Length: 184
Image 1 (cartoon, rainbow, N blue to C red):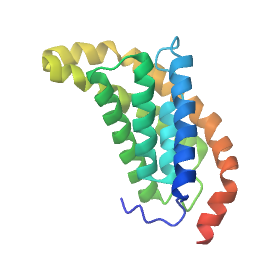
Image 2 (cartoon, rainbow, N blue to C red; image 1 turned 60 degrees about the vertical axis):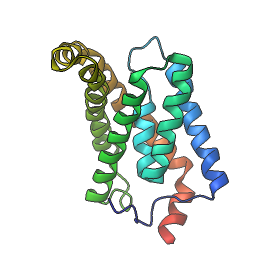
Image 3 (cartoon, one colour; image 1 turned 90 degrees about the vertical axis):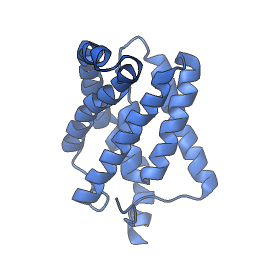
C-alpha cells in the first residue's frame, strides 16, 4: 500500500476536516434515518469511495467519526470497536485493490466496484460478528454468524446499489479536484 499515488485528492487541513465532517454527517444521518432497514445504509460505499478519492488516512478518519458519533445515538458497546475494525479492514482491502489495479489513475468501472462493495457487505458482517467469538468463543460465534447471513446479504445488496448511485455523483462533485491532483 504505497499511498503515494499522485491522483489521491489532497486538501488543506481545514478543508479536509470540513469534508470529513460532511461525509461523516451524511453517514451518521443515513445510519440513524435508515435504521428501520436492517443493514441497508450507504456507509460502506461512502467509505470505499473515500479510500479511492482521498486515500486510506482520510477514510480511516471518516470511519471513526461516523461510527463513534452514530453509535452515541444508536448505542455503544463492544460492537462499536468491531464496526470500526470492520470498516478499517474494508479500507485496507480497498487500498490494496486501488494499488493493485491502479484505480486512481484509471477511473474505476462502476459495476465492478459495485460488485466489490457487494462483497464488502459480507466482510463487514464477518468482522463485526467476531465480537461474539470474543465473548463466547467459537460455540457462540458460528450460530451468531450464520444467523446474521441474511442481514449481511441486505448489507451487500445495499452496498451494490448505493455504490452505483453515489460513485457517479461523488466523482462529478470532485472531478475538478481529481483533474488538478492528476496534473500534480
